[in-house]
Length: 152
Picture 1 (cartoon, rainbow, N blue to C red):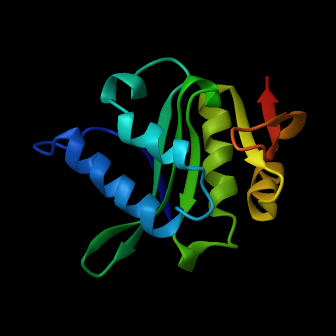
Picture 2 (cartoon, rainbow, N blue to C red):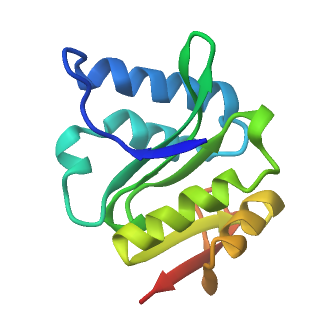
């Protein structure tokens, strides 16, 4: 498994790459993610990704017909904007989400995520990546979310 930082592909506009990430998110992460997270991904621009505290990581596997996306993590404003991890079901339970978050932390130096208390797998992923509880908030719609942070 290769985890790489997103770079614009030669001859491929951001909109095409973004559409692939949105389709991946809608297929494999839609039920676990709040709708506003998907909307934030839809609004994302290359300028956002080049801002301080922003990083898009892609986890790829080698397949017979070329590299395939196994998961990705996208953070803007050190997680205060967008904080998203989506992993293909075939690769869940192998620590890939935690590895993506760990790489985010090592590159950015600090990270903050909001995870619904009902998302046990999301909470486990964040704790395995080294994040610790920093507070709790009520999200729109009334559900409780834990704020998980890593600061160096």
